[in-house]
Image (cartoon, rainbow, N blue to C red):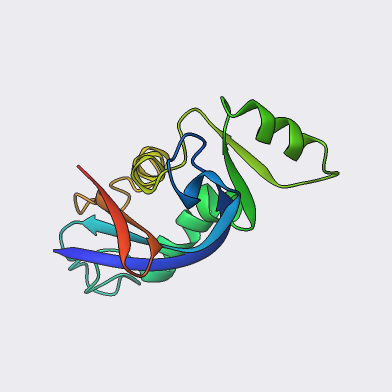
Length: 146
C-alpha cells in the first residue's frame, strides 16, 4: 500500500549559473509530497489499525527533520560565495547552506536523503520511503524515488 502526505513551505533560492531569470534571488511556495509504502496495520485495537502510518505522524516527522528548517529560509549553494556572504551580513537571517545547487531536482534528492532514515519500520509493517516529490511551482516538480 502507498500513502502520500503533502506539506507546503516558502523558501528563497537562486541558480547561480542559470542562463535565465532563475539566476536572480527569488522565492517559491514549495510543496513537498512524501510517499511511503508499507503493509496496512491489522493489529486489533492499535491506534494505527487500518493505516500504513498515521498521516499526522508523517507530517510530524517531516516538519521536525526538514520543513521547519527550510520554511522561510534561503536555500543557498555553499559555492555561491557572493550570496553566502550577503546572507551572512543580514542579522539572524535564516539560511540553509547546501552542498548542491538548489534546483528542484537537487532539493528533492536532498529531501529524500534527509527523510529516508526518519521513516523506518516503526510498526513492523515494512514501512519505507518510496518517493519525495518537490513542486517548485504548480507546473514544475522533481521526483526522487527509491
